[in-house]
Image (tube, rainbow, N blue to C red; front, top):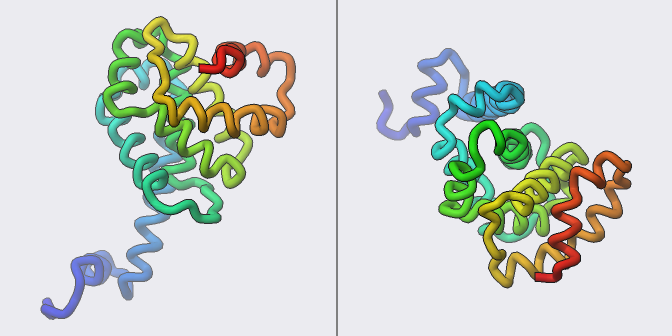
Length: 192
C-alpha cells in the first residue's frame, strides 16, 4: 500500500474500482438503496416493532442535525438520508398505537427530533418533494396528537408558525389530508 493513498482510495482499489471518485459514487448509490429499502421495510408494523428505535431515531437526529447546523444552501434532497429521515419518522409515528407512543415519544424528546424536524422543514421545505413535505407534516401532526406531547421550545414554535401555514397552503390538501393533519392545525391555532 502506498502511504500517500487515502483509505478511500485503498478501499476503491480493493473493491475493483479505479479511483476514489468511483468509490464515492458507489457509496452514494449504496446509501440511496439502503434508504429506499429501509423506508419500504418501515411501512410494515412488524418492522417498526422489531427495529431498534433508539438507533433509528439517533440516526435521524444525526442526519437532520448535520443539515440544520450547516448554513442553509440551495439543494434538492432526492433519495438522500435527509430525504428519507422525515419518511422514517412518519412511518414510526403511524405506528404509535402498535409500538406504544409512551416508548417512542421519550426517544424523540431525548434526541430533540421534533424541534429538528421543524428546523429542517423551515430551512428546506421548498427543496423537498411533496411526499417528504407531507411526511414531515404528518409526523408533526401525530407528535402533537400524542399524549406525551411536549411544549415546543420558543424558537421552534416561532419557526413552525413562520413557515407552516404557507407550506400547508402550497400542499393543496384534500379533505382526507386535512383531517389527518388536524392536530397540526390545532397546534398552529393555539399559538404556542
